[in-house]
Image (cartoon, rainbow, N blue to C red; front, side, top):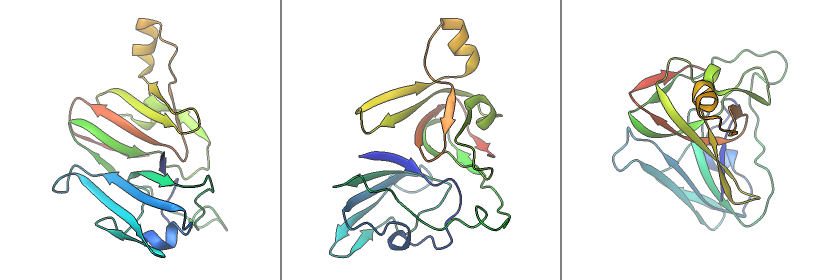
Length: 171
């Protein structure tokens, strides 16, 4: 299992256009604005089918695959100077599954800058290779408790974010 996100909007967001690796068996995302919260696609022959029909840069995704091949898709705005408008990601009070979106191509950036305007407690990222969770904490929380956890958001990863109240992330 991998917890991933796309750094920008794909040219074609149909799930089977974005995820072409036939070794991907299941893709999930959590969207608290939909009934039940979870959207799912599972492998059925050559296609992924289910309630999750598109992949975008406003969500993070759990991807279960039988190999470690990367997901490769065309993201306009990363080539030829084409501009792309960043998404506005709605956050609810409680747990949210969020992406790490960037239009600059940055590999990582400070979590407090990325989550500016959100009243957040903690984010959690998943390292598939080590099969471990890592905490991402606000800078002040890290300093106050002398924690050594990460304070950066990394492009291409997905994060569980706990927010104290609803808000909007504008990457």
